[in-house]
Image 1 (cartoon, helix red, strand yellow):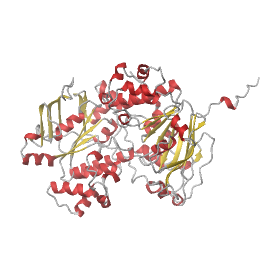
Image 2 (cartoon, rainbow, N blue to C red):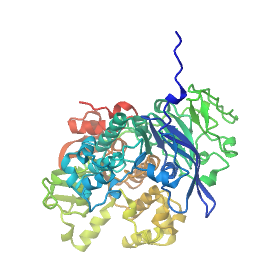
Image 3 (cartoon, rainbow, N blue to C red):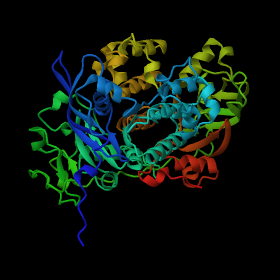
Image 4 (spheres, helix red, strand yellow):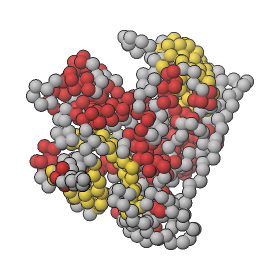
Length: 617
């Protein structure tokens, strides 16, 4: 008996459909984004991946009608089968109802003066229950009576998620929703989002620079570069094999948690402007397998077969990718069907712990409590750092690791315990004589997670570095500034720029340049790569490795990312709620963790599989 065909009308329309999306700046004639299109079915998840400047966040703002003044968008956007882009009122009504946005920092969306419950009630239908919405995102009822500043970062992100869900949207878009969170909280929040998405049958779009996170979280991945889509496909297929050199480079730049590399394969350079590469492959200048044809035209985005073809021989001109089925992967690379295999990165080895070296830094039973807090930020923490050694301090937010770093740098005063730096007692920087303070500052310098907040926005890079050189009693000519910039991989032209004109990676390099002006023996690094794209993170980590080798600097490296710890640290201290729970060489702690807490931190590193978000005993 023949099975009757399902009528076309029975197939639900895509929850979100975008076609021919472009963003332009009419006043200058610039195009920032073009030819972007994708669909997401109800209950399906899509990750949009790329570095800063690739166009992923701009895509979201364009389709939601949230572009800044001076920019215009063209193209078509359908939500649940209804076109919304042609009618500003319809698009406004769709936001928060049919499609909702969860941003990286929910604190910017929440009114700090209003309690959480009142803010959530504004977005709920009349008669709806705030308590039930809070329960859905894993928060207790009493959260409704608190202000945003009274919540942890993870709790604020859950409140932001509750606010995004209040209108019962068909589509949830999350723009880097966990970048500011520690690894375990990130995993909890993403697992929560995925559970709610499946329960509600929502479409989900994740904006991220982390490919492993995208593979773990989403059904499909769309990779963007310089305002264009360069590769798309199902997560499992892209994880197994990349058909565009940029996708491969992004994945290679992510530090592995299971092994140490001699050097992380960083992607050189940065993302170009869309219009600067309109007549060529946008990735050509950074591509290790570029061909002459790549410099003559923009490769179109075309389907490619899943089965890899024989690699293109050097110097030959490849044919365009073989067209496949409608659901085949797509790539904007002339080598897509025959990308040469990538070289295996060389393994690295952590330095053995010094047996007899006198510690450069010794911290003994350090204690610190803030105000009337119920528990101390530090409860008797002790550690040592030998000359030239890299020691990592890891833990979740609230573990005390940043407080420890600030005490060592003299930015906080411990309640008790001692800190000896190069043999000098610096437990209380306020009591040091002027020569002793100058010596302590020369011995240790600090770099922070957010370099923008530590650089004067009104001063040029050159003026900032000249001031640092003069403070150390060194020559401060333009040539000296240029030499300092060169030591961190920056060109002399940056001296005339202000921090706002620099990328995040360039600002962090300027901060490092300022910190190493006096060639300190100890560099205190407080989450120095947590806010950076994976490619820029790899560049900065390689730079720190070079500085260590060239200047013999020791480092106290504060981080929650154990994949980064694997690459940089010789020894590791694990903090939990202000207490030291485990320590040892990097190999001992990461390969054979003794504490369940350390094992939980390791399990929080994305592994690129959907099983990563599955709760484990």
